[in-house]
Amino acid sequence: MNAEFSGLTAIVTGGASGIGRAVAELLLEGGANVAVLDLNPTDAPEQALGLRCDVSDRASVDAAVEAAAQEYGGIDIVINNAGIGAQGQVDANDDDEWDRVLSVNVVSVARVTAAALPHLRRSDHAAVVNTSSVAATAGLPDRVLYSATKGAIYSMTLAMAADHVREGIRVNAVCPGTANTPWVMKGLMAKAEDPAEELRQLNARQPHGRLVEPAEVARTIVFLASPLQGSTTGTALAVDGGMQG
Ligand code: NAI
Image 1 (cartoon, rainbow, N blue to C red):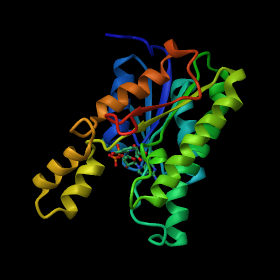
Image 2: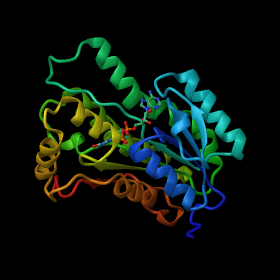
Image 3: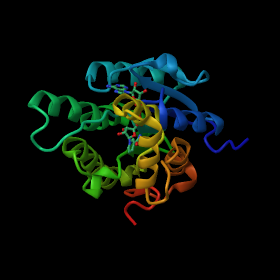
Image 4: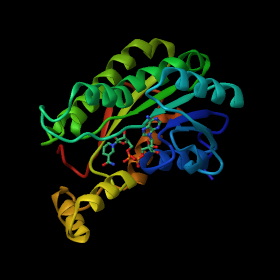
C-alpha cells in the first residue's frame, strides 16, 4: 500500500458521496486520517471520522473542524468539495436562491479554510484543494448561478495560493467535467422519460464520449494534495475529457 499520506490528517467536505467520497477513500488508502464533513456523515467511508456539518453555517463548520483537529491532533489537508447545483439563465433564480447557493458553494470554501488555517500553519505539508468545475470557464448554457460559484472558487484558489505560499500552504483546484456521481445520475433519472437514451446522449456530448469517473477526479485531487507536490500551488487542473481542449 502507498503510504504517501501517512501521519497526515485531511478533512473532506461533501465526503459522503460522489467525488468527495472517492477522495476520502483514496486518502485513507494512502494512510491519512480522514474526517468527512457532510450533511449525511453516516454515508462516509467506514474508516473515516464522519462529522455532521452544514458548510453553509459558520458555527457548524467551526465545531466540525475543531472536532477533527482534536481527534487527530491537527489538520494538514483541506478538500473543499461540498457543492450543490443550480439551473437556469440569469433570470431563473431569486435572491434567496443566489444567497443559498453562493453560501454552500463559495463562502463555504472561506469558512472551512479559515477554520482550518491555524492548524494548516502548523503543518509541514499543508495543502488545500478546491473543487471548481468546467463551468468556471466553459460558458455552459442554463448554468449562470452555478457557473458564478465555480468561477469564484477558481479565482479564490489563485488568490489564496498567493496569500499563503510563504507560509508553506499550497492551494490548488480541480475543474471536473460532467461526472458519473449520484448527483448527476439522480438528476438525469428524475427528469428523463427514457433515462438510458438520456444517458447515451449525455455521454455523446462529452468530447471523449463518456462521463468523467469520480475516481479520476479524486486521483487528481489527491495528486494535488500530496506532500510529493510541494512546488505545485495556484493551479487548476481540468479533468473533463478535453472539454476545454
Ligand atoms: P454529490 O451530490 O454526489 O455529493 C455532494 C456531497 O456534498 C453530498 O454528500 C452532500 O451531502 C454534501 N453536501 C451538500 N451540501 C452540503 C452542505 N451544505 N454541507 C455539507 N455537505 C453538503 O456531488 P458530486 O457530483 O460528487 O459533486 C461534488 C463537487 O464536485 C461539487 O462541488 C460539484 O459542484 C463538483 N462538480 C461536480 C461535477 C459533476 O458532474 N458531478 C462536475 C464538476 C464539479
